[in-house]
Image (cartoon, rainbow, N blue to C red; front, side, top):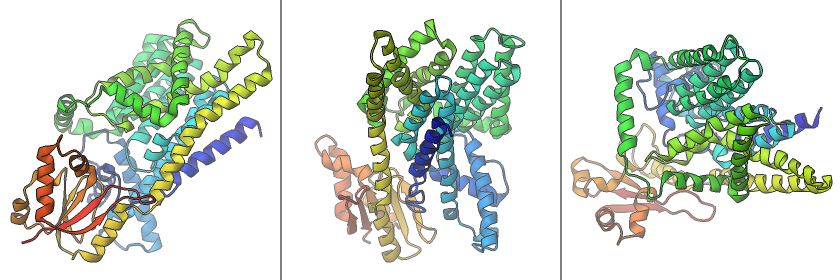
Length: 500
């Protein structure tokens, strides 16, 4: 076995271990906020016998993937005796399997980054794959049934196929890259920007057959066809799609702007993920990439490596809705840029007669500085989710102490209850007065510090919100409070009883 294969096997083993670590945590009561949007829809599509997800907030491909997962899970459950009819199945039994598939997308993306990095060199690919394998942001979201990790997979696949099309410049090769870009858009609409990579490769390949213009047109046609096939109700329910798309665009446009410019917020998120050594290497990689994209060598690979992340970053930085998960599609390219600086940048020192031992030691030091902080962050995240959280404790207390059939109002997007309770979720409990909860015959409230915490910490800054919550808390009877401590993660949760 060549060293690169041994190293790749170790990297993939590390990526698998980090992404499958305690994959079932929080199921079914503490799932990620947006997981039900996918799992529940796929589950009800299976039970209802329909292919219409009736959902256009993002593309439909991942919902269809989870529909296939649900069907396989149900068939296996039927064989093993978990249920004897479709009516007996509950959605709680399908979350873990959905997470298994998402984690598989995460591990597969690590392998794609290795294959992409081979265009720069075996060591480049291995180091870039290792950095993605331990990246906390990618490890974290590989644990949940969300669109971000599959989107990152298809963006990386588009880049790999775009580079392959440049090396074998046929219409078929460029069309395959277009298909990958169309599938990225079918997972999440902003994935359509991945098409910038095969288009850039096409126009920088004079040998493209039959012509660069024809290959570019074929790329766009293949992408459009793949998008329609993977998200068919975008066309079959065109009015519904257009209406929801316009609503989403309006929400993104008119949402309150972040306290700091989006670019600053995202750079801070990147610093937390890569740490300062990684950020400095990425900055050097961007500079090296711009120089090489203009003057060579390797103009096409460097241009393709920059064609997506630079415009994508500026696109998300202009939006008012800011979230760290939006950065995920950039991460594979940033890993490649950082790895290129460590390997190729240090190799430039040969021109200045630096001894080989010094260059090797420098590469080893930079590798350790680049990999260690993200690896520790990924391990820290996995250890945290393995601990008993306040949400675990609150769920167990509710199951043991609140009678079945009670009406419960939950604050925030964390805790979920079983079907034996009538419950609804609100953004903030303070939006209704206490008397209204009495009129609505609500029995219990569950308040979360993720919603009320900042108001109670800053009563002068948020005087109205502080007054609303203190009035609510004083009128209701507090039955239990679960506070985070060392070894007990999660928000503070208060369980309140409405007094009649």
